[in-house]
Structure formats: C-alpha cells, structure tokens
Image 1 (cartoon, helix red, strand yellow):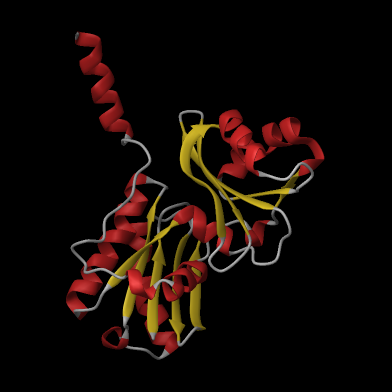
Image 2: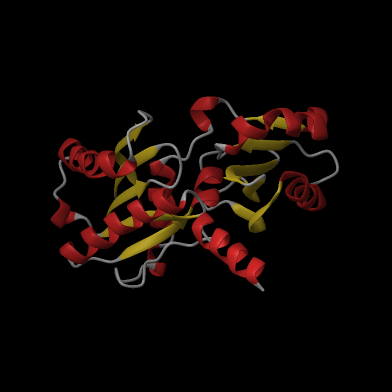
Length: 236
C-alpha cells in the first residue's frame, strides 16, 4: 500500500509518502509562502525522492479540518484532483487527531489546540496511541470552556500536554490557569506532521471514499458568512 498525504490546514504545509507502513518521504514548509504555491511542487518532490510515480499511489489523504478555511480547501482540492486523475480512493484525516498522533509515548492527556481566532480555539483531547484514544470531540470554544472540558475527562493528577499553533497564542494563559499540570510540547513535536496523517490513513484504509465524497469539515461558518449573518440579523 502506497499512500500520499498532504496537510495545508495550518501554518505548516506538509507532504508525506508511506510505502507498506514505512515512511518513504516527508517534507514540511514553514516559509511564509501560500500553501497554494507550495503544495504541488512539494508533492512532485515527494514522489521524485521516494521513487514512486503518482500512478503507483494507492490511497490519497488530506487533512479535512479543523483549521484555516482557505488552507483546508487547498489540501482537500489537491487530493480530490489527484485522486480523480489517478482513479484512486482518498480519505480525510482530522487535524487534531493527527496532531495527537505525533505524540506516541506520553503518559497523560494530549491537548491539541489551534488558534481559531475570535478568542476561540479548536481543541480536543486524546490519550496516546495509533490511532490516539479520543476523550473529547473536536470543538470550537473559548479557551477556559475548552480547558474545563479537558479537566472533566482527565485524571485528577494527570499531566496535560499542549501542542499545536494555538499554544503560541495561549501559552501564558494556559500556564496561569493550570499551573504545573500543563506541559508544552517542544517546537519540533508541536506542529502537525504529514507522516502522522499518512499513518492514520494507513490504519483506516477501510474508510476510503471516492474523490467526490471527500469534503472539508468546518466547526463553524467562515468569517465572511458569520459577518453576513450578523448584518442580516441587525436588519431585523
């Protein structure tokens, strides 16, 4: 089984190739270029360096959310196009689960958070594993509300491990609210890895769909739609 995985849901663009359960290639870009510029050249490099042609890929996978609305669409559209062209299936992977999958051996609750703007985080909670054991569903909440839900499912003394781009925004607040129960994952482990996306696709091969079925997953409406709804409500 050969899997091509892409992620454009957050600040890091990533591509990985998995061959028979082994990582054949992984690349990430943190260069402030738009993901639409980075993605296809990264895919081409991944295929070239792994020695696999796109026709040999058996399964395509992309992160379908939560995350940047535009970013998610870029990755999903790229995978839909490649899967359609190759006549192969594809599968969507949850961004927060993929973040948690990058921490395979911690003893505690894994708390992936993304900065959802508007004072909210996209968050969930897991225990380590492949796939990770889910404790909380994906949510878009104010940080204190999210933390209260995490504390409700965590053991009384369990360590809480925070990772994801939301940490840069909320680290100080988390530390103030949770004290020494909060642990912050080192930078090299804190971003979403395309290899984790590929591994999750590998363990869920039976959930593959055709390219028409693969769709982004949003936890809330895009900003433009929220602004339009607020404007319409103000007219009433």
